[in-house]
Image (cartoon, rainbow, N blue to C red):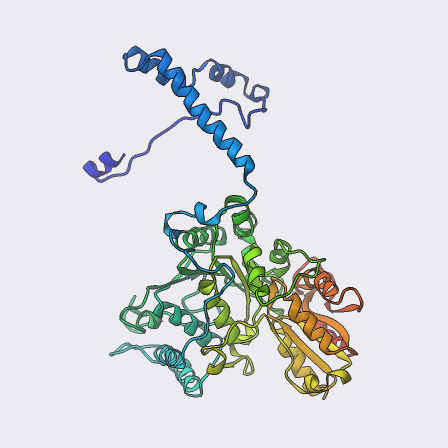
Length: 522
């Protein structure tokens, strides 16, 4: 084929017919359903016999040499099989393919590199990301307003979600890490928040990518809209992530719900690839998630499915030491997180590269929080010495008078902002504490126990906006019970069980949300 293409400049098709000598497997009986074909197959000599006969006829080898070669090869296989039975652990470093050569090196397997960066780097990326393209590049008037708003935030040393993401990407590019993002509408962002590709308004197919022009010696940044095939594109990005551990490879669903058409990739490869084939992947799945009245196909990234696939023991409280968070990450098959601040999103993305190993990261990402006035972070939360927060405790009046707190709400994601707004409206800041669990898996047993113990007289309540048979409840409930040694009850507040992720009625959605808030502060 190679010679044909070289000579004629055309592709060729080889019609190669193969067969299974033993049917589906060694104990299958293919004659049940294919009697005529397998009558012929059983009369067919094996490839080894055909080739051996050819060599004998040509005088290349003798019968004795053929038998000796067969015995030699059989002994190699037998010896390898016996040796394999003696092994009791997997050797990741020996199994990883050539692009991973030297990746593990002498790095401590339970030490993570820092994820904070200097303020100068943040400032540089922020200014570049907030500036219009050079020259006479004509951008949309609406984008000028967006860039102006970004610039004002940078001057105030604050960030929203889009800026935090750009700073994570840009800082990795400076460190020589290839950053790759694909998915439906990722260049602009499903919710028109990202704008990583700017389009000239009068010259067709003329674009500018600000993150590709941060430093002259930066690594490449690839951002590309994909076709509407979650199965095909997610599978491709998984393969891409496995070729090079020093690349941040991300796939974003247009809405988290859409990942369900790629479920077989998630079940058979992403969640279980290391256990099956001793192959690691640092792939990031970005799944827009949140109950915002948009109906059953645009509300849920199905966190319950990913959490059900996580290989973490729920009924035994682990041994806690200073290396506990890293040992958890090293032992788990994949990470599931639901960040509530741009700074935490920044850190969790950078942590994917800072880790001394690779694990898939499943991120429930926001929709309304992209523009929420309170969902902002300060530069100081991303500079040197800062890191990803697995849990964010209540730092308000409740913490200062912990013994008087009557209710302790634990939650994850967007519902935190709904709860804090309602608590403020009811003037309950001193009576109700709200704790955010940012990393669901591995579960932060140590921090959850610490926060629960802080409020000894409070009812413990898990609050979620998802339905009871969905979301996080079935995962966190046994772990929270383990954290309190089954000595205190864990209450549930959230939507009732449902076969659908969300109602299609805006009115019903509003009523459900009101009921959730009333029950949270009952």
